[in-house]
Every structure is written in C-alpha cells, then in structure tokens.
Length: 104
Image (cartoon, rainbow, N blue to C red; front, side, top):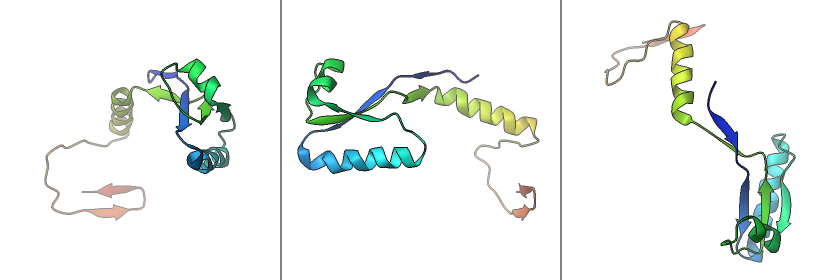
C-alpha cells in the first residue's frame, strides 16, 4: 500500500478580483467528479488557519497527500513484474512501437 492521508486544503482569494478564479476551480473540480469543495468566508478560513488573511476561500476537505517515492517504487515494481527493465543513464540507439509494447 502507498502511504497517504487526507489533509484537506484551503484555496484562497486575497482580493475580490480573484473570486472568479475560485469559482472556476470549483467548476473544474466538479467536472472531474470532485463535489465536496465549498466556499467559506474569510472568518471561517481564518478559524482553520489563524495566520491566514484572505477575502474568501474554497475548502477542499478530500484533498490528500501521498508518499510520492513509495508510489514510484510501487509503479516500478509493477512494471518489473510485467517484464519491464529500468535502465538509468543509458543511451537509446533505436526503438520501435509494437501493438502491446515499446521495444528500445
């Protein structure tokens, strides 16, 4: 398993001119199936992060973080289990695309 945790995130506007950007971010997230972003007031955002100064924010409670190194090692392991070889600092002299693989 890849180490991960939900951390939540605030996406902030520091002036009212940035409000449309927050709306666009919320719409883009909804288009990708992320439907839990919600607007919070400056006071609500500051209650979560006391040093924060903003005019409005989007709260994304499902935002998370992963251990990217563990993810890359996991992907490498899966690739090697399926016959791939990782070759670092190696010059490629030729290659071809086949229906189910790339041969270099």
